[in-house]
Length: 114
Length: 117
Image 1 (cartoon, rainbow over the protein chains, first blue to last red):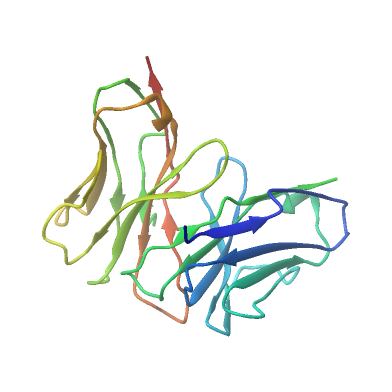
Image 2: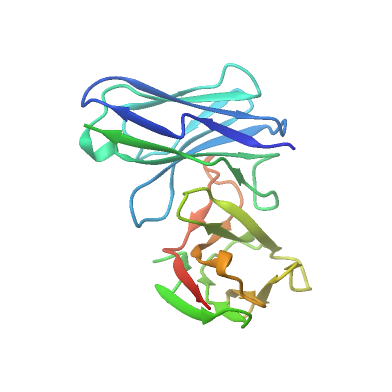
């Protein structure tokens, strides 16, 4: 089945130690997104890639970076995690941008910062 | 102003009964999409149903239907014949046209549904 895969499902890191979360998709979708969801809140978009074009949200901290080496993979790098970065990180894909297409989410990675 | 409003923080429903989860939205775009997602305690965001702003008929997907009232700007989710496995958080979301290259789902605050036997 076509799907969005995130690894690992749970990640524990230390304060200030760089961490990378990964996302892959077999849907061959053009757009990939990273959302951050803190406890009891709605997801918040960090950035998205439309093909190779990177689009950052205005309020995304510089501590968060992303890479998309090919259509299938997208990575979220947190350069110096703080305690406030503990959250669920959700990757999503969409065939294209705009109001018509559905965004499909992966299972998420729960990040714990010690 | 809130773009997506879900006024029910929590709802209870008995197994096999129907339940309606409310959602109102605010947009000046003519073209937009409305979505409902289910998020169980595992954290995965599961797509349930989509309604386009130009769709004249209400969307249905199995036990899920979307009661779309464009003039009232409401997009309520109806779950028929509730099952215990329907217990989860439910998010209403909207996707507008592109503006300044931003392309995101705007989520409501969610409604936690509990189904009891």
